Image (tube, rainbow, N blue to C red; front, side, top):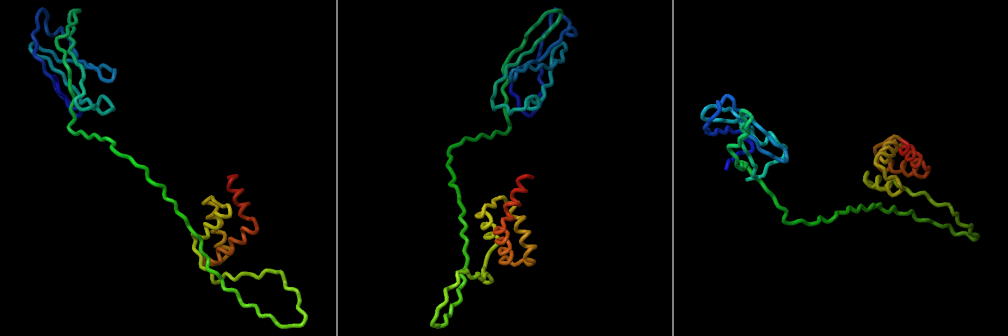
Length: 215
């Protein structure tokens, strides 16, 4: 049995006895089949010996040849119209490094959900002082404006507000935020948030979203 290493070339030498024909009139090949393809390498023949240079098998095929994989090989000699098969054997391939793995366990990784809660501090209302009069006038139904000067808000909460109002596209969110920064004329997040709320009330966001979709 012939042993080969996948990543090394090898020279094979055979002893022969030639009779009835001069060795100069002989042609020979060392042949083997691998993955349905037959490979042949010419033999150098003299009176008593014949030899062949085999390249590394790894240079012939793209796949990894398995450890101890068996490959059938033979020597073909042709001379004066005759075909002779003086040698036939099995080659076994060895790899200097072998690493094999086997899956023994698998488990599902639970999905991690991030829940962000928006917290806004309550603004204390100013006390309403009523004047005592004999004739009471009907109370005004006009809603008082809320003072947001004391609000504390983060950029993440601003983006959450836009998403809750239907703007889920990240590119559109950034454009709305940049426009609000310019309108506010200040990096103050409360002022920026105020400008964004104004844009949503004017429905300018829907127009910007439709333009981005058309692009």
